[in-house]
Amino acid sequence: MSQTSDAPTRQGSGHDRGPAVAAVRAGAILAAIGVGLGAFGAHGLSDRLPPDLLAVFETGVRYQMYAALAMLALGAIGQRRAPMLLLAGAVVFGGSLYVLALSGVRWLGAITPIGGVLMIIGLILAAVDAGRGRFGSR
Image (cartoon, rainbow, N blue to C red; front, side, top):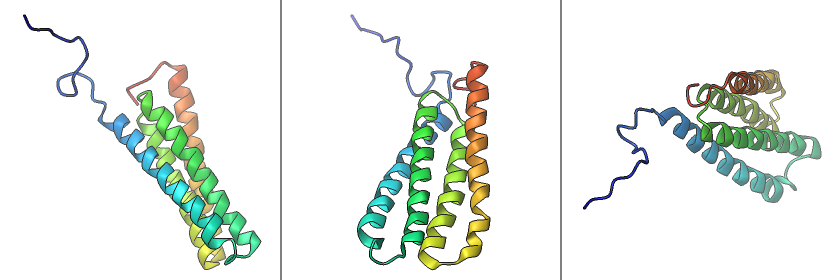
């Protein structure tokens, strides 16, 4: 007598979780990079950067971690578009701050808000979809 399981399998489950799984993976990778950059900032840059640029670097790390944690949570509940906006925002926001802090090129600060706006839009989209009960579809 064979036993069958009611648990859906990865193939043939009728539900494409690929984008949501990708969001969780991307969030985990973004968080791991954030931990590494945070350690680098604390241990490798604290005596090499002036305090104002070190604070800029730390701001990039902090918001990268916020985005990563949100991506993990949203991907876990099936959100798809919102995590990708968070990823794009974290790359633009954090990336511009990292380059600014390490190079001193101040004009990069002008593109930082674009990343922040992308993260805000991603979070608002997640809230709207949650309010409409849209999980696993966006």
